[in-house]
Image (cartoon, rainbow, N blue to C red; front, side, top):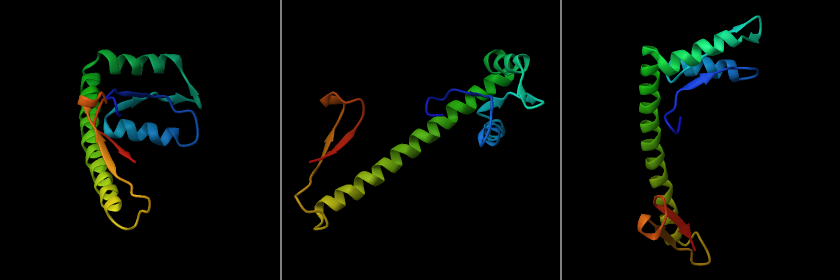
Amino acid sequence: MKFGVPIVAMPMHLDQPINARLVAEVGVGLEVVREEECLIRKNAAKVIQQVVVSKQGVAVKEKAKTLQDILEKKRNKEINVVVSELHQLCKSDGVRGGLTLHRRTKSDGFTYGTYFLF
């Protein structure tokens, strides 16, 4: 979901059938239905065609893109919390050895803001 691409779920065993149903229920992908415990080629082709060219596929793609945006915002927020806590830890007496937190940004040649402990 990180890249906002819809999922064509072809569950085999263990937790995959549950995850496939969840993906379909959330609306970010479609499940290939098994017949007699086997994946059937025509079912897989039908689901792929639905995702790629049908109106239902457009909705699935939009939902996957929306979820990507939500996950990215959540990830950034969580990273900021971790960085803040690390910064507080570095400033406190809880860390021996004088760790400092340095931020590297795009202007330094990094893809996104990156933090290093020295």
